[in-house]
Length: 325
Image (cartoon, rainbow, N blue to C red; front, side, top):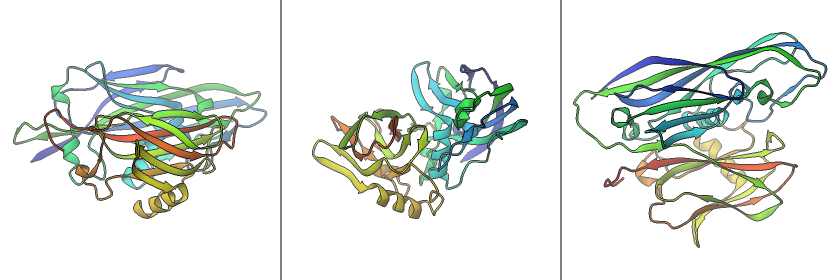
């Protein structure tokens, strides 16, 4: 039996292209960290207006936060992900877009902001409580945000542009829970990192290596060409270890299945795909990489632009030592 609580922890103030951090409280079990971005930009002079990002990745305000990190015991990274990508994962895992206000692009003062969830209890799991984060067992727990600036939020930079002021802040809220029966339990850890690789040319065997040792409940793939998310890079997705194939599908079929699995909420996304190993939410079905010597994505890709990238965002489940999943 649990008692659920929510509280405000801190507000991280903007620092241009720098980082702010907060020591998170360490006592109870974590479900989610809730981040509310608030900001404004005052444009006083502009000759050629900037252009907002198009396609599925239009949560422009979140791009002002280049990276979010949650680090335990000073060395163990539990989360390390751009806020905009986290917003996309919120859509896949929660079925709805994050609340979001994009900045205006005219000569005026424009507010922007939105709310993103950093999940510790794995969303869409049958038993989300299996992945609660037990903060009481940690010596330190640091939440760190690395900020960018206004130009990170637009795909085409303006000319003769002056921003008189740019400001942003992140309000940090905590969904936590108390186990009333005080029964000790070893919880799994829901880890979110990412790997990025640039495409040098079209190939049917573009390889991205993944870490082995833990379990994967799924992977979000993100395709970017010259700063925009596009559907013109990825043709086919293969996940394998040596000659063993764990997943293989044409990219357009993956998108079609995503639309069905996530009830149409991802139909308008451009450049995003989700490979799901736990469609029923049973974490016991996650892909077990603990016995593998190698795991890799082999992708059939095009190179439509000058700078083309594929990023892989694994949903990784870390099993406590000595415990079977």
